[in-house]
Length: 507
Image (cartoon, rainbow, N blue to C red; front, side):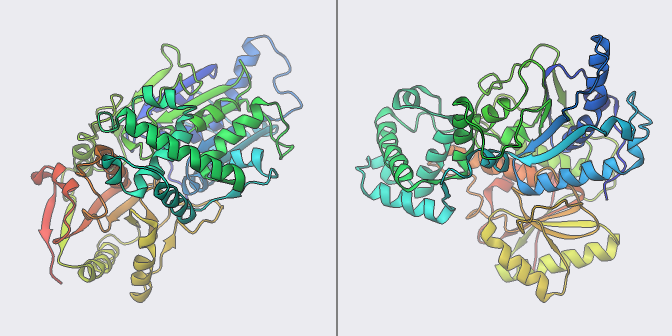
């Protein structure tokens, strides 16, 4: 069940802003971006009717339903936002918002369609039925590895792991890099100075072989979805799904995670010259690579249509200060917002914990001990166990099963609405974006997992700092970080020692 959230004045202003054109909301984690996204979606029907009325239109709603879409990156957040929409439509919010100038009732939604989708699922509707096959990650890695073996690598490229080439190939697709000349000129954030012209020529030649393989096999990556959908749209071809149409209003949540291709695709879905577009973004949480401008992506943000939300209202001040240490070390973006700590939190709140375990077995025992302790001390509350890699899930689920601790797996892959209620949740850090929990345990924060100071690629450190910052700021009341004595994550050295309770654990 969603909490009864009262909008502050700045959030209310965003929800009620004129629906003409593009509105950009840049906010830190915990500032209420997802809540604003949902409440703006619910307010848009009334705002549009007011605009049409002021324009002298008596037929405020045409026979065709008013279509509003919220788009986001991952399935978990999509399910959560769907739940927020449904619960809001069924709550007293529909009859009166005490702190808003907008009054809603059921009549406002008689001819309104509000949908929540991931970008990839919507793009798939345009390309399914064309004979494409999805290439899974292991197959992608193997294919790239085989292609690398056929090439003549320079000395510097010979030292690169296959994941480097996989990332670069996906980056080409996301950035819509068309040819070698464009690749040679483009600024590669986090890697400039490390990839010379000759290396780029070799990489592009290998990428050409990969594209040829895709063409003959008709196997595609998720990163291909937006580009292929755009291709069909630009050709004027009817999509596979005859029900698809342009939207009167589009809301993009967690937009910092989207590639140029994804954003271009979304911009093509808005009704020309009529649609309302609201973009919500936080550069510090950009855990997927983009490095683009909104203009590049097809969105025009005019003066007075860009707003910043600087205060983290979710996390208590102690957690916010630790997260700010991590965000402050992100070096490859110039659009970061300075994070303001919410001064209204409880000053007596305990510091976030960095708990150093001697071995993995102790860490698993500590995980169970922490969960039971939180339940004993705090009673009913939501507890999240977050980890970086999908492959880690089995170990944590087995531990919880053995300890007879009930849990909800947020990465189960089911497409159904979810609400964060009391209980234990397990999830990757990526999938937890946009969610919040009373208590968060970050598991296995080790150097072998968080390669924060990889000398071959500074981009790795920045990506992992964003991910850790995102995971930390899921917590409202307490934060516990588990690491290993033998594999201590150097990224944790970004945290000022007096801001965290750092202890070695022996059970």
